[in-house]
Length: 146
Length: 146
Length: 81
Length: 81
Image 1 (cartoon, rainbow over the protein chains, first blue to last red):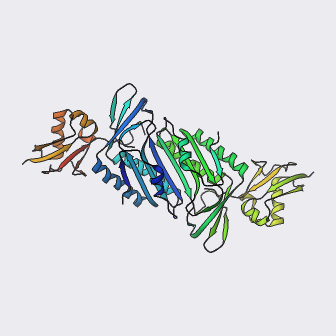
Image 2: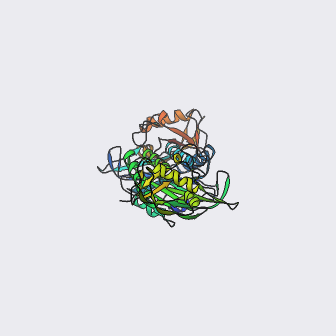
Image 3: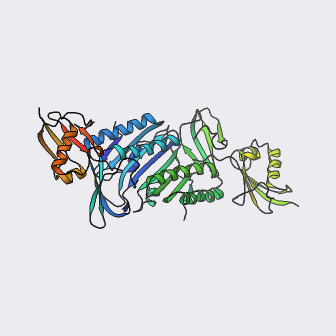
């Protein structure tokens, strides 16, 4: 079963959420990353995500399988966009279903953190001044943005 | 502006989420409480939420206003169902928009915890054995369920 | 001195009282004594320290005197979410 | 002994190399030396300790020798989410 997916086009959160509906579920936590109009003090006009698709899919599945092991959750999903995104577009979605909210919140937070640290996806930001850049953040904890 | 609402009928999460969309938003965290088929070891067949409407609306607004003060978030909403709910139905929804995910997660968790502790809404569970009961949990920390 | 008040009953209190509200005269000096009187009358299992009290749609103090014409609610432990 | 390998370039590495992949013979003893050679050729700003390396779609070790016919990717610090 695929819990992680890359998507080259906008995707529907409602359909993904519906996959996690289950009579045993008491708490559902989700996170969405949207394209902000600013980052690290600069005005952003849009961005592009590029992935090493083969490895990103393998590593993304691994993150979600690990989450299901580590936390008392029933299931989890994550979808990450690739390609060009405008301000306000959905970049990444994580959904977690659990019996109780503690595990749902903890797993949701853990998944987005791991995806951001481990899955080979890169963000290319375009700035209002006309320049653009790849974001290659310093190791965990040193990144002034998220 | 109303950030908190009670709803006597099923409500649409997508429309509520859309109200929080904004070019400044980088992270959106949401929580949903769904009616589980079990609680505290008993099989649940359905439930009813009753509210002291006047005070619940005032106190719910207060929780959301306090969340906007306490956390670096852009906005937040919460809707809570009242009336009869079947297994799998949505009981409560919280949505939080922020520039960064730390604040979005923290505020979302704080809001659902405060709503559950402070807003005068009561849950009446019906069990598979035919009996039913009001849940009047012991003070914070003593409740074996969520 | 007595006050005419309306008391609202919710959740298990309503089930036990078998009414959702009632209006009556009370000479209770404060809301705590009013609840104790009603508890004695209906046999409510919940003690004062498990409840909160509200007057006219706002949380109030147990030491407050019942105001004439006010609407009083005793709030059992909540269980939303 | 030499190995024929395909190297994939992503993100800033691709921008600097101005190609997204290339196939060539290498006699580098391990993947670390292979990257250092390519870094010298293209002038990649990222040092080895900022990168991870993958072979045939799985993470690998810098000490691994380049295998003949393999596909090698140097992974710059990721920035999804």
